[in-house]
Length: 247
Picture 1: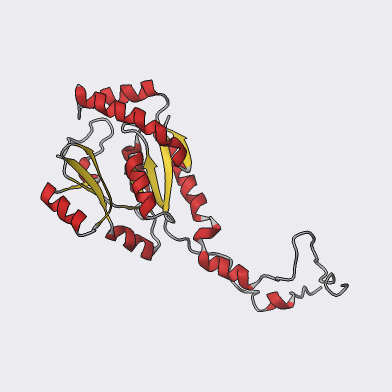
Picture 2: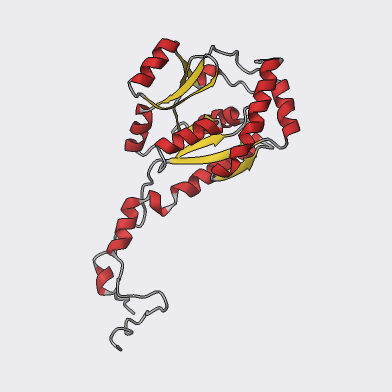
């Protein structure tokens, strides 16, 4: 038996029903010490095509973490305060913050615009403050994932186990992490990082799901729009194509 397509479908029988998604800026947000940098480092090693844009910062370099191997040079470009001010004044930063006295950090705008043009996905390691700033600048691309520790006690242990800070700096870091908890509900997703490998798989699943959202597939939506029979209503199926003839 030959299956005959309806007239409005006949010209679209070979139309491909795939689409190339627009860019996703996946922001891992949350307190310092939850493993965000380690997760991004692992992800980039496993998938070299995933993009990352270094922040520019005025703070000094920290030694590489002896446990995770995370190195500042993988995540930051270090500039003088004079250069940072020039970047702000010439509107070259998508967002910037001043979290502590004399310490400025920001995200270059042009690499983000390039990624959108190329439909590349980008990863970010941010505090909620930076995440919300970036979301305001790129609301269609930014997806926030709050990365939490198993407990605040675990976070304290992780912070005190680091060699990059001591005393009042560690206390300040922990206090900032406590304040970060106030912004959980401003994120689209939440993951608790018990295990880096398992958490990374969850994050990759989030990205895959975001890439399948129809609002990120404009060309595919147009193809379906061209195949739509606008006479059909939602309260019945009409597989025989006789409902309208019977009116």
